[in-house]
Image 1: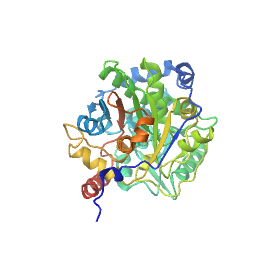
Image 2: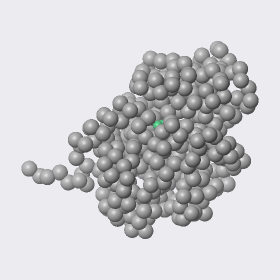
Image 3: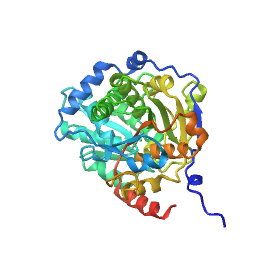
Image 4: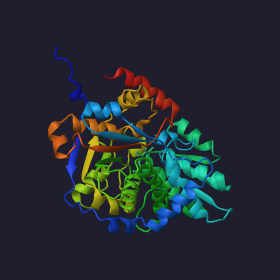
Length: 380
Ligand SMILES: Cc1ncc(COP(=O)(O)O)c(C=O)c1O
């Protein structure tokens, strides 16, 4: 029997180049204004217990892949919420409340964003309603309730939970704090993205403004990716290659880039990377992504558990890293590309490359994380 080649296991499902790439700092910062980024950074850095999350060098992985450096932004250490989502929702709640106490904030969520909104509401003593679909685990629901929010479970998928959130909020005069934008609803998603940008500020401080050659950004609705690109436009002197990574069954950014217009897709199979299982790109994010994305890559779910387990077992770095499912896509896409010499050359990944990936979450769902570790230790 033929032995399995490691390289056969690390594959990307699809990859396309953006034919309309036209990176323009000023154009990007029109959609996420610098004044708002400055305000978000000032506010978040004044929060109790704020400190930058670590930027870890995956030195074992960079030597396997023949790259100069792989930086991993470890969001498992973000406050007690263990995900970058803590930054956006809570900042937006602050902005929306604007000193008011007698309001209710509401959102639909795959988990982490709802926790952030609930946390922000609790800090300000506001009422909070969080809508979740039938696919969100009960441990994620409990984690939201921990911050005093009322959790409303909705039959069907994320889109159904969003529809229900909008309908009930309109009826009851609640303030929707949603992390995706659509026509006529752009300001609050902008606040949320502004909150995320503090990650990029921290990163450029952590590397002393050194050059990054490639950035892998995972996308659900693209808010995090768009925000990181705005952060690059604001804080970086050079422009890295930008690679968007999505689950193969939720490739709304890839389809939109391919068609050069926002393209809604039907998610037929929910990805294990629940926070990224989205069918439609956020409008604010799209305005940024369409100009600045170099490549879109999709990945299967097959290596998610394996990467969580490899990170936990110090296979990529000196110290153990706690990485939930949405923390793995950057590494999966990077390995998939590097194990295919033609793709590696095309994207210009080589011994001089300094790559940045985002470990977006830690064990935000303990049960799921333990399952990943178990499953991952049994995968090749
Ligand atoms: C938990 C979680 N939710 C959602 C996302 C996607 O963010 P966005 O929907 O802003 O693209 C990520 C990104 O990795 C994530 O880790």
